[in-house]
Length: 178
Ligand SMILES: [Zn+2]
Image 1 (tube, rainbow, N blue to C red):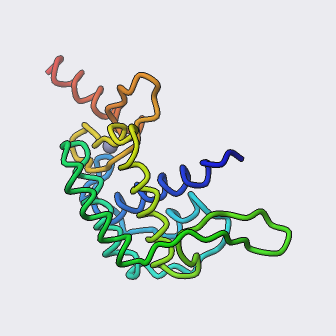
Image 2 (image 1 turned 120 degrees about the vertical axis):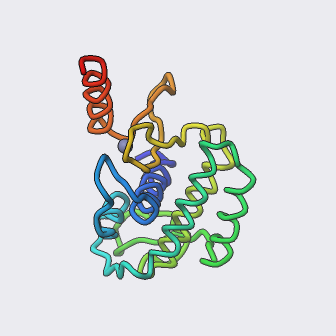
């Protein structure tokens, strides 16, 4: 595992949490009930007793912050993330699950929602402080509010998923042949 892999996973989870609480439409459908456990599985193998309501406000803040980036409003994003870092008392700490398990760098207690939010806010903060911040995009498909990280080398990804890409293609084809 590379030194930055854990943080990459946390950033992925942060974007997923943001979409879970911030998107009204996801891949053509109204957003389903937030599934926090599914989000946390992106970054931990542990079973976390996650109470959805503890993540709602932080998840919405992350969505607000990340939503600023495709619009080029980096300063506004920074302000929201700084507030979240302060509120969650994000502080780096090496933790492990049991004695011979590998150490992981966390930014708050992994037993509490605020600990996870601290970690996600830190991952987003590191994105904001890097050249990669333009990789954060909003899906261009209709009826999809999801944000995503463009992982293509050419940085040309326009959709959050192949589902949205295909939907858009089909709609364009229908419009042409109608
Ligand atoms: Zn989409």
